[in-house]
Length: 145
Image 1 (cartoon, rainbow, N blue to C red):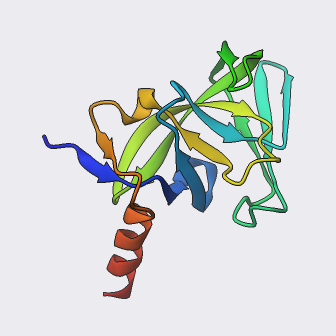
Image 2: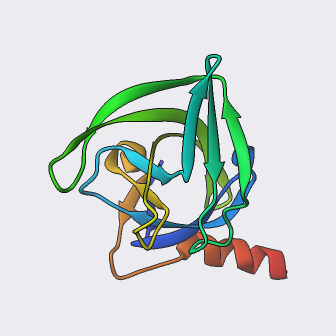
């Protein structure tokens, strides 16, 4: 199966999280994919996450509860090692649903709330840094028809 070409940025849907048209940035320098989460609370073997960010209005201010999650250590771009939660969900790109693991982090200072890393991109996508919003434009074109 040929790899799909993806641009450097796009908008995607996370249907199980009820998040739609969320800005993403493709980050081939990152191994894991990361999602901005305003607040994370672990209690009673559940992970409660608040997806809110005034800079990203499509974050819907809902609390999402994960029953299945784990933790990992991630080295950030500044060299600091952080313990992060990992959640499993699905993402829709080019009208196809994919499983994805996301580490949760505070990215409120960043322009894009989601970074998509190499682990997800591998064997599925080729990145063309000169292009953007290819999946979103395809989705929009299909909605217009």
